[in-house]
Length: 493
Ligand code: GLU
Image 1 (cartoon, rainbow, N blue to C red):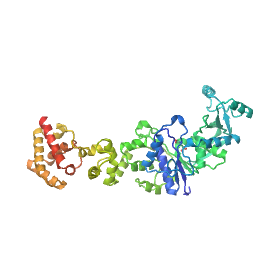
Image 2: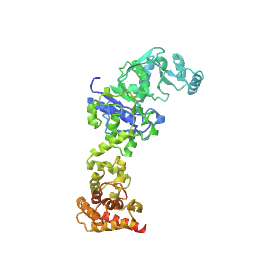
Image 3: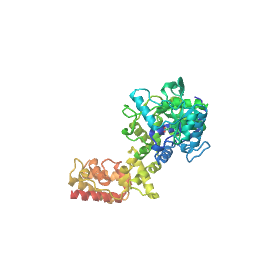
Image 4: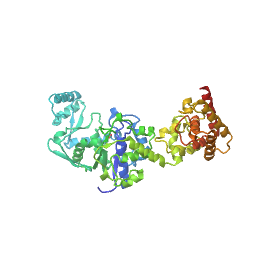
């Protein structure tokens, strides 16, 4: 394939939120456009008025932006090939459908829904091939006039040649041949004046100068219809690239809602980084020429090529996505990580919105403690909640005491700890470590025996970052308050 600048489009129907399948298509579009210095166009295919979801367009735009896939032409961006909402292009589709009727390549069909239902029923009973029976294909001009004069609603159907075959081409699969016998005279314009997907897609891809159509494999069945339309209009078809389907993590079937999150927004809310999702989707259907697995968007745009897109179904593995998330979480600077965590903490009420600079600076200070410990941004509240809260829930006595300890001994440990900590002026990590190790020595206890109750007392948790760094980050006053609280709990218990 030549590497001339491409014009590619992502053409979602706003019938739901952006799905990861669509996100992968958009990603590949974007990469090809960046790689070749071409344009990435966002076109909203809102011609199915029954399935329209009002906030879907906002979700699609927000999700694409979150992933870094900005478009060169389309809603908000503008462009000379607009409008980019199909519902604003109805006159164009009507004009082109009429043109095909005038050329004898399409026809008015006045069949009522009742007649069509009856026809389908008979076909089923006779176990005959389904599809429109071409009842209106040979209506005379007078008959057509009569129906129209009577104000009967009609659709426009495409005249598929009765015999012969149509050859189509997919860039990855090569040539495929479809027998016309398997196609019926499909509708191109509905009775409400709206186009069907086939007509709108072909007209727009042509008028918008699209060079490459990248989309999911489920659209291959539409390809003969699209080629027939291109031929009827006398237009050159673009290059088609159909992407492999996603299999569920167990590899047993197509990925669906049953297998968990499938919407981009859900991944975002779960605390995945866009970098991780992008990298993960990149390798779900495309493979690089090296063993490298980690690609930023820029690196991916460099390396991407259509030839290396696979045609076999790809398994969707959340473990791999988690792995990528870990990689990108650890790559972030402390400041950047804090920035990404902030909305999650605000949502959980642990930080105010807007967040005052000194509180944000404190959050940044906490990042080295947890950067290696969280897998998802959504784990941040659990990981740093006890730092941000003034007070914590008193921990369960059993958790403070630990498996091998006794309440009395634990109270002594905590009281001794209070005493040595009160005397500290240097509350740095190193000094804390020296002081507490010396305490363990003095009490003739193993360091772990001393450290665990302190850890639980000040955090409420048994698994935390290193004790001395967390004490230093908490600050003397909070540490003392929480030690006292734990002593009170133990005395009561
Ligand atoms: N509107 C179609 C969809 O929702 C677009 C298919 C295509 O890219 O041609 O997936």
